[in-house]
Each structure stands twice: as C-alpha cells, then as structure tokens.
Length: 315
Image 1 (cartoon, rainbow, N blue to C red):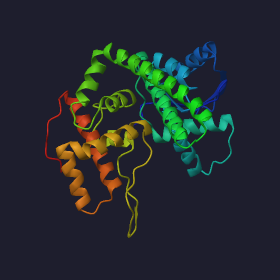
Image 2 (cartoon, rainbow, N blue to C red; image 1 turned 45 degrees about the vertical axis):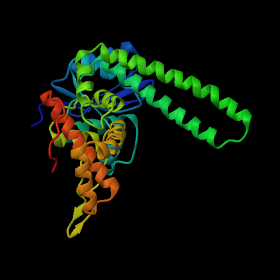
Image 3 (cartoon, one colour; image 1 turned 180 degrees about the vertical axis):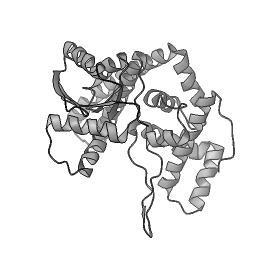
Image 4 (cartoon, rainbow, N blue to C red; image 1 turned 30 degrees about the vertical axis):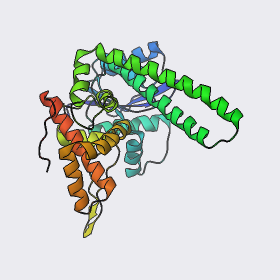
C-alpha cells in the first residue's frame, strides 16, 4: 500500500528544475542555486507525505538530493531509460520540462519506487575518489594501447611522461581511498570481511562497499536485481526465450565479473560450480554470470550475518 499522499516529479537541467505535483497539477520552476533549492524543499515539505522522483542527470541532482534527504523527504533518483520506457508505454512522445516533470510524478504514483537511503558525506567522497581512480585507469589503458601502435619516437616520447603522471595520480588517489577506509571502522570491516572470499581482491571489495551500500541489507533477489545479475524471463506462449540479465549497476558488475573469473579458478566451491555448468553445456559467459550471482549472494549473506568466508557446497 502506498503511504505517500503526494507525488512530485522533478525535471532537472543544469541551471534550473521544474517540479509538478501530480494530485493538484501545481507547477513550479526553480533555479539550481542554494537559495532556490532551499525554497523548493520548503515548498515540497508543505505537502502531505510527499514522494519525489527525478532522473539521474550526471550529478546535477546532487545538491537537491542532499537537501531533500536533510529535510527527511522521501525521494528516488531513477535511470532515465526506465522513465523513457514508461513514457512510451503511455504513447507520450512530446517533451517539455513540465511534461517530463508530470511524467516523473506519474511514475512515482504508479510504480511506487523504493525511497533511496541517505548517503553519508564520507561515502560520497569515497565514491568520487573511486570514480576518479577508475577514470585514470581507463585513460592509462588507452595510452598504453596507443603506445603499442605508434612507430614514431616523437609520439612515444609524448605518451611516456603522461603515462608516468597517470601512474603517480593513481597511486595518490588509492592512498587517499585507503586513508578514508581506515578512518571508518565499519567500512573497513566490510572491506576486510569481503576479502576473505577467494576471488575477491581489495579493489573489488572496495568497489562493492562504495557502490553497493545495500549489500547485506537486502534479500538475495533484491540484491541481484540491484546489480543486474538476476536472469529475466523471456517466455511468451510456447516460446521459451533465453534468460538475460539487464540494467543494474555497471561499476559493480564490472568488478564482480573480474572477481568471478578469479573465483572460477581459485575458489574451490565456485570452481566446481562453474565446471558443473560448463559440463552441462552452458556457454562460458553464462556460467561466469551465474558465478557472479553466487558470489553476490554469498557476500550479501556474509555481511548480513557479519561472518567470514567458509567453504560450502554450492548447488
């Protein structure tokens, strides 16, 4: 049963945002300045049990999300693709700021998304540091690839100093990440606990702790759906389609994939599970995704119970 009496959609842009109350049709436009955000939050708080829905916009929404959380107003930041699919289901093709805000309010009422948890300042900082580390690693990999394919010594000399600078920056950021982790005993404990699982290294544990704070607080189906490793049925009538995974958190899936590759070789129960799937005719990628899901479920259970890894038979 929906406990929210008011559903508000917010369409965000870089310099302004539009808010629409579904129940009354009231429409307001605010700028993204601190003062205007404060005014918007006060206006939203006047409504009875409000639920706010907005789209993820590359972090333009961060200040507004923080202000809403501080005011203890329920909100959900949704994947824009889901909202677009929702609009198409209504045949809604037109786009204006007001129309989009109304659509988000309609989504809030019909789909009743789960309000997102408040993110601590420390976790936000860690998340940004981890994101920056991943960006540097990506750039470093691109530069290494370019160096392999150029013959000009001049170009190679151009690439080499940049590669060294990137290595230095990566080391500095990883040091800062470790310092932040060490400053938070609970966070440090979660990272260390996950590392007791063969196949889960420090980087993967760090990514999971930062990007998936729900780990250990959801059931196995919910956590698999959040990450995007839950197989989705594709059956209709007599057609039995291949089940596929979709959506979810890409950064978490990328880290889990590398962990699954390692676990399928060096974690005895998961190695046996992987070999059993391959022997049954499952393609390698399908078997690896199954290992990813098993790893995630195991980690979820371990964190929920605050238990270290122990070998077990995996069905």
